[in-house]
Image (cartoon, rainbow, N blue to C red):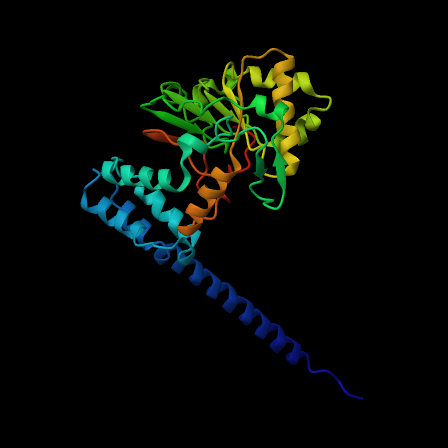
Amino acid sequence: MRYADPSANRDLLGNRTLLFIFICAFALVTLLQQILYGRNYIKRYFEFYEGPFEYNSTRCLELRHEILEVKVLSMVKQSELFDRWKSLQMCRWAMNISEANQFKSTLSRCCNAPSFLFTTQKNTPLGTKLKYEVDTSGIYHINQEIFRMFPKDMPYYRSQFKKCAVVGNGGILKNSRCGREINSADFVFRCNLPPISEKYTMDVGVKTDVVTVNPSIITERFHKLEKWRRPFYRLLQVYENASVLLPAFYNARNTDVSVRVKYVLDDFESPQAVYYFHPQYLVNVSRYWLSLGVRAKRISTGGAPVRLLGLPHEPLGPLHHAPLL
């Protein structure tokens, strides 16, 4: 009869304990190295931070140089790029007039927003076979009924706004007290029907000139406007006389829902205008940014200067899916 050696179990247990301690120690050292050395440029610039630096200070020049070194976005980690952007926030901002003018000129040549941002009776005549932005094999025939919905010419074409504000709905404006600054803009864009009730006025303001609506919101919250028409109308009244902008020709599903928005406002005799993005303009914009390594399908709608508010720069940030704004 054989007897088990009790010391063998103790040795095995001891080896496992040592292995576990070794793994924990290794993980701890790795974590400390990441904290201490993994973000050297952040640590370097913020270690002696005492307040905003001038635009052309040595530190700010170095920060901008690090960002401008990135020629192709796909060649750098998104998190690292955002970290560099964060560190740049300690520098006072100054507009580069020559770069801004060159950028606007380039966008004008590729996309021509003054003529093709929205569908109009001028750029989309009666009988046009309009290709969808995504489903390019699909074609929408512009009949008399749809043609009458288009403005005769491009809205705001001859307007000059000195200061524009683009207000997103990412939730990061909560407790920001940006409302006064937003209301001071000459033209205010708001994205996807964000709340601007009295509860949030101090943070987001109330002024609205154009509000965008994603058709998916209408589908999910208002049942495609097949029944819930009055609640949708009441929601739009919060923005008073602001124009409503939709991507009606993004794909076939969006068209019917977007057209119903116009019908609802007409039925309730609302003075609010309804505009639709021109699909070819959106295609041209996407191609332009794709050539620069940017894969997002939407850009700023312009203005001089444009203030971006409520647009989270980190897709995985804690407030990216916040219910506010």
